[in-house]
Image (tube, rainbow, N blue to C red; front, side, top):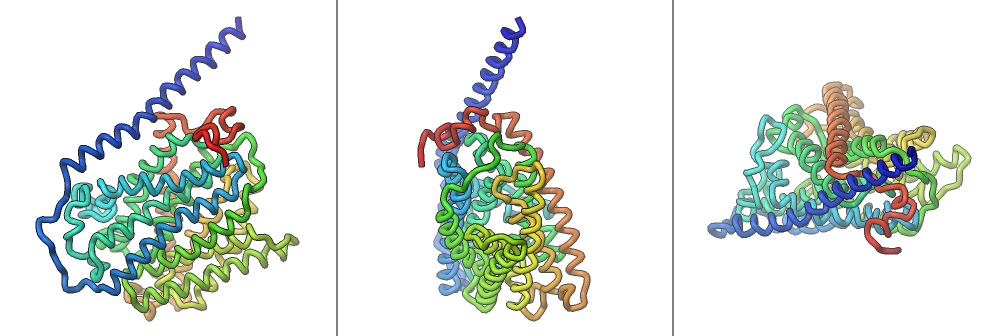
Length: 456
């Protein structure tokens, strides 16, 4: 009798999961039909061709290049993560990055850009109707903080940041998330976590921008938000049934690192919004910080009796790139080296600490991106200097002034709480609509086959 009841419960759970899964499977069709209707109803055709005297062809040409470079980072991330997971999960892990380019582009065009950069609502979020369906973007006046490039150029440069942020989180729940549920989660994350942070930090009327928070290219908006979301995801999704694995392709990790490093010059130098000295400074600090971080990571490993590895070198490079992102246009080149070294050592220690816990952050997204972003945020408050960028109104702690560091520290605490708690709520909502985790059989089979019916 007991066996019969248990069998019934198993079948009942299977039916419930099937219903939930089918419910989420209807979302893509609904989105597609809605998108067709919106494009017909809101064509957003400019009434007349407009020209703006302040537009610089040189700056626009550089931003076209920078935008392409930033987009390249997401395929780079796909290779970086894909090479680290087990062979049966390579394609699914890589696809999670690629699908972010697909889905977030659509969301950004419809109302995502408006949420991040539309007319401010209490300095927290943008009005979704401001640039709905890109209305007024093709012929709009340049963004106040990027006055020498077309508004449409600014909009699509910022899109690439919105794409890669949720893709960064995937490393935390790799090898165990249901693909259709993942699609819903990244949409919710973009709307309720990324967009408010982007608006508050980068919009002239944003509360953090007005307070004087410095985030040159996304240490707070991108890496801290993704890092804390990764930690929340790892805790919520719990451990994999087989947490230990041999990385599928170290060569993929090397390739992905090269693509990320190459694309990051668009990420950081592009955030100067022009072909100017500030862009050159950001490029220089990005180069030196990443090199210093890689050297520090490998050196630290050797001092602890470990062999210098390709994986460690690649992780060190990425940690340096993450850490310099908020500071790239605010600090000197020697100080960027210190940012790379300090951030690399701290991240290395946190990776080691995480490995001794039960937290299954598959690819150590929080220790690398979360901690890297935090370190970059705080060290901006230490090394920022008014002589490098006019946006710096108060020197950092290194120069004897405490105000900026206090602002950066308090913001770090607030953003951390917001990103972690907000993500946890979104995970609960997603899980209620459709199960987040694949079942034990699907996980054992591998997500490549169970979710996509494909092999490496």
